[in-house]
Length: 264
Image (cartoon, rainbow, N blue to C red):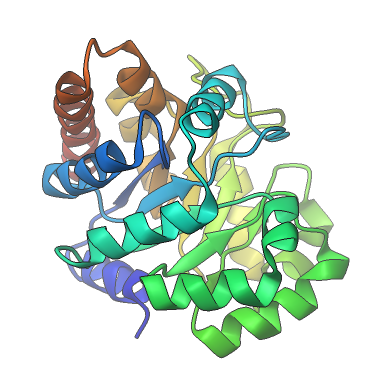
């Protein structure tokens, strides 16, 4: 069984929601990425998203764009990130998911990328700009290597939700609002109604992301979904830290606060 499925099975047995943080691999460096992942797992993270840095991340706001730039300037590349995952796998079985843009996968080689994901221990991939028309070929290769292709839907998806989620695995990444990633004080979407629509088309766990700013917002929406994804707010903790040690410590504390909000 894929680690993602195992995680959600255990969480359902405890009637618990998943905490899914996002960090950009290589920000500030790949060694610190290993430390961050392990610290977040200890703090209560259930699944961890690793962003593969990209020079033109269309779905991301300024915070994650700057994080990608720092990682790229530091020399982070897909091959090095695969090695980083292998180091994590030496000591941890936390489910790991890549968030990666289609052009990065295409340029690296689709089969090479997915075979290396499988070999390194990556459980799933999210490709936010993957055209539905291109998905069939990637899905076949991903299935062959046991890597889940995680679907992503938005409030505007509506009648396309069934098509998007068909053959998807792991969980559905539900974008909370139109626009790019970022820390928000309020989410204008009727999340309850939106999650209800998604549930009409798929039984996969629903993970709510884009704009979850902290424990209060996580607690507000936890009853509407199966997981919350927190990205920009985590990246901001890393960026504001005075050194790597503080980055790891403050990020772990933040993750713990969110997980407690989901459990409480």
